Image (cartoon, rainbow, N blue to C red):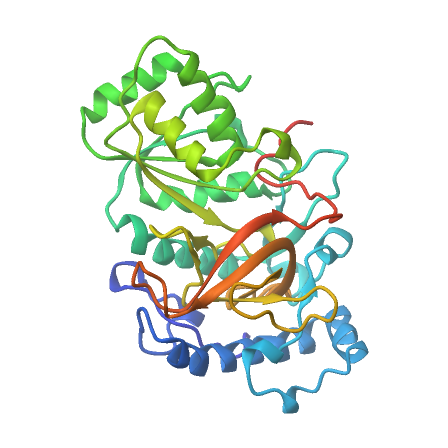
Length: 373
């Protein structure tokens, strides 16, 4: 039996009596002060829960001399380094309750992140993703062109981060079409048929950043035939990581897509396998936003104290979703800058930040764009 757990509910169209999520009245776009009053008790309760149900996590808190009675704000809660999920399998429920394993999509030379999800945590992650994305792309379902190959969804013994992304965003798909063949070449005949069927109407594209660039944009730039994607909306994420030498700035990425196929509705998001579902979308002003279900801090590397506004540091991400494993507070291996609270030009409230890429000397972990075996 799960302990009582408080986090915001969804918009009514996604609220299906979702158990642990339907505990308090819905709040949308709260001020940071309101969010903190709700987020901190929930995050503290998660810390208690994982300490009571995951012995290795409890031992870590003891080694840190963590005193839950002494903390009063979210920023004071302990965090785990993201690398620990490559070397340990941390569980907070019995093995019988797990429904799937989620791993980062790495090469054999890169140690993979590994987390195990029970049914309720997996369902909460999908509902949270749907709620977060609707603020940017709306609630309607459209045909979706996926910049990946069909076999991404077929994996024995678990679910890759790429597959989790495809399945998660498929909630917005009226039907799915995979744009790539199994050899990663662009399936142009299938794409032509897809565009004929949508007939200039709205549709979605989804893919991980490197794959969109290499297997979609680059191929279309070399193709003499112009395909019109101007009525489409692209959702992409995952960064460049190990393939930094092929990375391009966001501005060039957008310009190239508009030039090669007329695509100009583009949304980027930041996410990680360790906290699936708690994605951070990038707004029209170029800032990434924490949702109701997540929080961020940027910390100094020398002592992990909080950075000031516009001071670069190490990104810490918190999520109210991980219940089957203690992944609710993680220090990432990514460099970021905290840009402020309730001050984004786009009008969205809460904390916003900018991502600068991998930390210098940090071990490269496999994710969406590191696919080769």
